[in-house]
Structure formats: C-alpha cells, structure tokens
Image 1: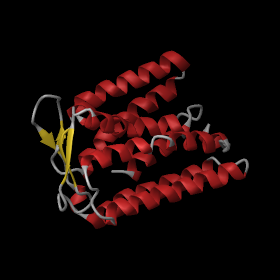
Image 2: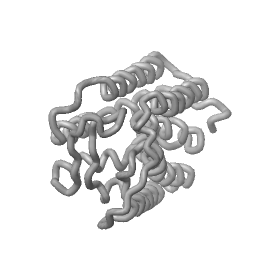
Image 3: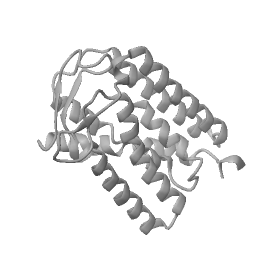
Length: 220
C-alpha cells in the first residue's frame, strides 16, 4: 500500500478533528517512516527484484522492527501514549493507535507472504493483493479517491491556500504512485531508503493546508 495509508489518515480526521491531519497521516505511515532509517543503518534489508510482484520490484527480506505485528503494536502504543500525555486528547490518541495498526493490516492485505508476526522469527504472512495490478488499483485507488472526496466535502477550504494546498498534494501523491507502479525499478535499496526520507517534508505541507481548511458540523 502507498496511497491507501494516506487514506487512513484522511479518514481519521472525522474521529479526531482537533488532531492535525499531518499527525494522523504520520501515524498511518509510521512503519514506513521508520523503515528507511533502519535500512540505511543495516538493521533491516530490502533488495530490488523486478517481477517480485506485479506492483513493486521490492523484495522485503527482513524488516521485523518496523513492520512486524508485535513491533507495530509497540510503536502504536508508544506514539498514542506520548500524544495523550502531551495533549490529553483521547480521540486523537485512539486514532493514532489505530492508524499505526492499520498499516500492518493494509500491508497484510497487499504484500505477498513476507510480513513478520514477531521480531526474530521467520513466520511471515500476506494475502498478496500486489500480485494483481488491476486489483491493487481498484482497491487502493478506490479507497483513496473516496476518502479524499469525503474529506474535501466535510472540511472545505477557508481560503486559496487550503484549496490549492490539498489538491496539489493529492496530485503529487497520484504522480508518485503512478511512477512507482509503471516506472523503472530503482537502482538500489539505498536509493529507495533515501527517497523515503526525502519525502518527510511532505508532512509540513499537510500540516499547512489542513490549518487552512475548516471542519463542518458533521466532522466535529
């Protein structure tokens, strides 16, 4: 999943309107935020294997500390607990916890059997949606389009920054998604990891346009 994880963050805004959309999306993407750092540090491993699935050339050989079920339970509890301790906003903490855990669930649906249950074991699972390009586009694209449309209607822009900020962000995500699906394989795992880190400033963009949108009654 890629844009599917972003969709979870957009959807969570309804349940935690006082929490920044950037925080909610960050929670849904958290394992992928941690993963590039661990790859560059040599703690986790990925390799380029064209044809590994119909959707991605990446073969995830070892990533138990960012993507195992137990590790994500720990990350979810740590992030949600830290947020609640700092802000004392229970809906936001709950959405952060669920957002992190949703990452494992969506990856379980999309990955081939390579997703670990526990760190340090070789028990891996995955339903393999990525084996079907059409199925991935239908499921992930459908979720993303529906949720962004609902967010745009329920949290209309209060100014041009809110309007253009959202739609330019959505266009950028779609361009990146299409490039990942149909572009050439990346040259190395290191390039993949650094590309992930280079995308982190996008959270500032989300924080900015979310502040320029107003929540309607059905969203509060």
